[in-house]
Length: 369
Ligand SMILES: N[C@@H](CCC(=O)N[C@@H](CS)C(=O)NCC(=O)O)C(=O)O
Image 1 (cartoon, rainbow, N blue to C red):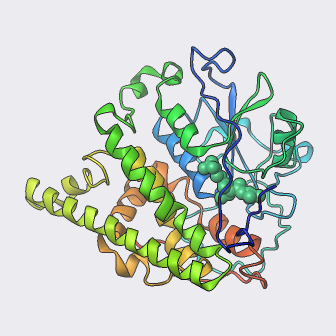
Image 2: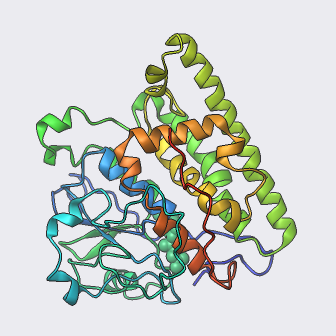
């Protein structure tokens, strides 16, 4: 099994390739679109899983696909869920069909004390939810039920088929494309259906793909390559690379902001409603970049040592873009949980943070718009 940490030979971190990659569609022999058939298992801490949660909300699929949220603490056996038998009695099924899968902690600012929250904390609907489909306590059980000889890491997100009891897909990039493909549109009430945005419109697809490719390698995964590096020269190379690419994104957004300012004669509301990375509408590129940038100041600056500067102090246009998404788009805000994010990284990566003390700052986790 590949390690969560860097490969010991060259000290560089290599992310494993996902094993399940089926696409739900009317043409697929097994995985046909249906409401209530598929279930999503996520961590609110994980940036890859977070993409799927945001997209599920943006695409109007909260009532079509239910969600279970794993505990923020990742232990040696992987991700876990609350014991189903005890939890089932006290939970309203509707909670699985909310943006955050029923987790109720307020998430706008978790920069208060968390030292008294133990890794074993088992507050239902705060630390985790449970699995009403299989009654499993471990994410690994999904992998073994689907593939008895599975021998890689048990990662979130997992998109599960309740009919065949198999994993459809465990690759976030592919899951969000399926959500955006329109195969579930028929299950969305007609009035809502007309409002739903195409996150990868044909006219922007090539540009989105090109942007995603370098952002993935240098920013989304770049922070992990810096943080999980096991020798100083690998770390120094990777952290420098992360900031070179944040500079590049800042420049893209700065140019965009100037164009929009001219186009809308400085009308801030109009500018912000077009202020996105690609084109002048919200796209998948924004979703994929957001999940890294929202974690940057609270976690990556200190925990992954990505500390040349912070987003709030060093990148005014990225900071504005981030706060616009967070404060003006409920799909982003309602799926962002700073408590899960901070506790997960600082308590689970004991090789990076052996004493598991969670830094209190930055205060606040995100600034007002
Ligand atoms: N390729 C996957 C990567 C997912 C991934 O790396 N998830 C991490 C959490 S951020 C995980 O579940 N790790 C568990 C482990 O390594 O034990 C995707 O994008 O869906």
